[in-house]
Amino acid sequence: QQKVQQSPESLSVPEGGMASLNCTSSDRNFQYFWWYRQHSGEGPKALMSIFSDGDKKEGRFTAHLNKASLHVSLHIRDSQPSDSALYFCAASERQGGRALIFGTGTTVSVSP
Amino acid sequence: GPKVLQIPSHQIIDMGQMVTLNCDPVSNHLYFYWYKQILGQQMEFLVNFYNGKVMEKSKLFKDQFSVERPDGSYFTLKIQPTALEDSAVYFCASSLGGGNTLYFGEGSRLIVV
Image 1 (spheres, chains in turn cyan, red):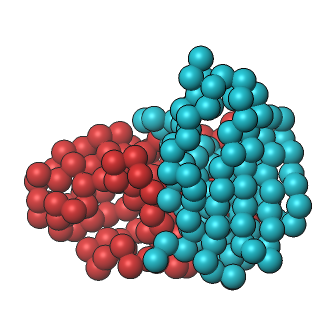
Image 2: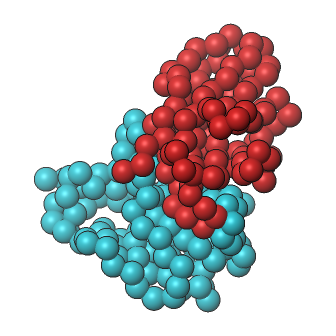
């Protein structure tokens, strides 16, 4: 069983539209969450971290965390073709260099 | 931003041979990681390393795998002997401290034939 599940598996969004990605953990020990983005042929790059309940906004990206339900979401406003990539939710039990466990991934395609 | 360099970018190797994947982490980072990714799918944690020691390893980190970072040089992943199922892209990552963001390299694509 995957400890970090993402949905949907893939998502098509028109340019300028809103993309919404979901992530759920099955391990209540996970308290720290990140969103990473991976373009084809590259390594993942961190978009943002979220450690506290509520919303966190960075530019066009907004993350939301609900620790009680172990649910994290990412919303991309005004989607651009350059946002087309594989998005990963990642979770860690605690700070101290512990393993960062990645989710199953969501492929986002933004069409002009 | 901070750069993690991985060498080689691609390698084809015969099954049963040894391979060493090299990683040059961000200069002041203290925590180091290896991940495995097959066919652009999920990033799977292999191992993390701090202060000269393995901190955690997953079930994917088989006995044939080893890591080391002798005297602040490259952080290496060695596979000996290699098997067909080791074919994948291996990503190295580093972080400044525990709980900090991981910075990934561009990956080393390993093909075992």
